[in-house]
Image (cartoon, rainbow, N blue to C red):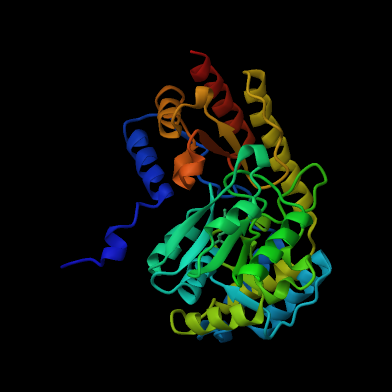
Length: 387
Ligand SMILES: *Cc1c(COP(=O)(O)O)cnc(C)c1O
């Protein structure tokens, strides 16, 4: 049999590769601590699990869900968005539930990119934007994010990368992998850029609720007129410790929502209604778990940044996400430094090159392992680097 070229030419998904390496070392008996993948180690809040349990016992949830998500969920999303960001959304036209935001991000490319079209993707950035553009037959054009601009885009320079085939520009703040945050003025520039070049502006806000030191992440839809050009992706994965449940949503441009929904009705048959009811409980219920979660990650962030800065790094503690983005010593290649840490410290970190050419010279450390393990991992890293 012959697999399609679009699949054969795909690079292996970074974390599938890392998983393989970890499994191999563990099989050899090594004690490996993985700071590679960002998967919250805290449980989903109890009232959310309880809502799902009750819903699972209700046979009406055993049938096909509605294609566009339950009206009650779209209403709960719009209400949460209004409370959180002060932006009113029409739950019928400006809100679309997703099978996790990764599903929607990937399918957005299919909905907007024709073969030969281009999309501007953050470099370094979450790999899905680039891969999905390629799967749709398009070309991902890097939007360089540099340390001396605090990993924020230079839209003046980016204008030179726009062609008449450019359809989409992607952003992601708080950022995976750089942990950079953006304020509203960056989003104002982004909306102006998208409007000027007639692009869809897709903002991935998966980490909007995971912020530190009192920083509050804005929504791109807080920019006046943004809903004409922007679609923002949110996820329950990080803010509610629900990565396993597969639920997220996008909000904004009614045209983009309609295009993505049209595609999705032909591909999937919606989200299990029990999971949708859990999401309603999450978005409508108490949010006190968030303070505890932010405090937990902030403490871990301080352990990682503190250890590295005592060894001679000069890192500013990041204000959001669940990562610390670390330049390699002496600018050595990210894969070489990551391999050294695996060999000498038994610690897995994500090599920055996996996030684009602009990630070279960095590794990403994830904060989603229990405190004691993180402390051990950082001690071992310190020892390995000093050797
Ligand atoms: C974790 C993450 C998501 C969330 O993905 P889900 O499919 O909702 O679990 C989206 N974007 C980025 C950049 C992420 O790191």
